Length: 420
Image (cartoon, rainbow, N blue to C red; front, side):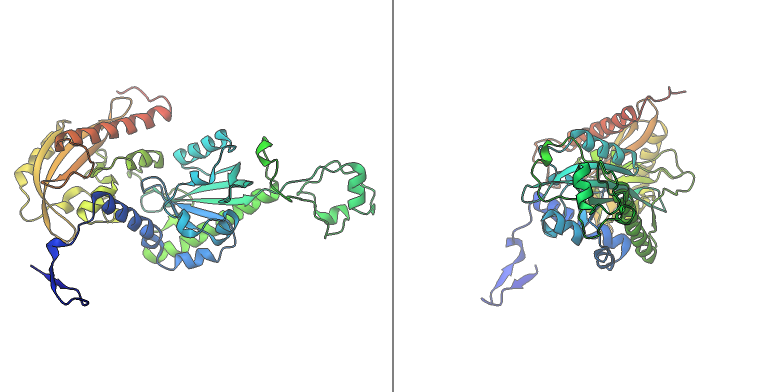
């Protein structure tokens, strides 16, 4: 047994006496690692410094991690919101919403995320000190060029300035009467040189935030919309450049090869709430490649997500894996039946473990098989769920949750065609 020596005392300590992390602590550690590696694994360690040079308010989120957390916040955003980087990393964007945030706008954002498309919407958010402020919220997906999945979402936030309503007399007074023009309202699209006014005159006043919550909406100007779009393009250009250094290229548009199935981010999010080790495979593609892997599966096997997506499950097998059990699994899949087996598998470090494996077909709303879900549980491992359930019951629970997520997605996406 390895003995550790504490210098202050000089006595050997048996490592079996050292406290082991609890399941909750292990999961929190895994979550932190995923957040830390979300950008560096795809864009290199230098991307954060490059993003910091972009003078815009924006966030980057990762839909592939449970809870769709924030993985980067720009200096401009931190200055605008009053939060520190440590306070926002790993959190969800809901922390910036408040009692007067328009629910319809929030639903529009959720729908854009589900449909993996770009959206601009006016939104009333709240700073850390509780003061409300109007922003133009511009969100756009970042697609992996190799698999077409959404790697990240970029969320640019442009403050919407309050535009004062000017009467004819006050407008003429502001402009010094130089051109005697009638101005009913001052808008940002109208440039000062066109009006012949003093460029030092502030037409867009936002002295304080009183009354913001009573406003029904504040519309962004054309200039503010263009500013948000330019910022998003600059961020996407930076991410694309650094992704080329790792070979995991990203793009603002989905470009996937024919025959590869991409999991929609709206399915990734409910799957991420299932706190068990499981994967989804696509039976419609050669070798049934993995199209989704849970964080717990990565924690169990030691692999990272980009190492296994698109691969078949053969990498888990090794020299002592029973081929007869593998044949039993293949036959069950061919017959479109569920099966449960005990299989010797191997982690990335080639250490072995007995895998209590349950595989089941998952059908969509039209009754066709969309995926196969494989639930892995290490034999004799401690139950981290805190529930007194057998391995079999926990596996059936995972299968049921996956089926609900897949069918709900099909229903929300619209009526399905009847099965042939």
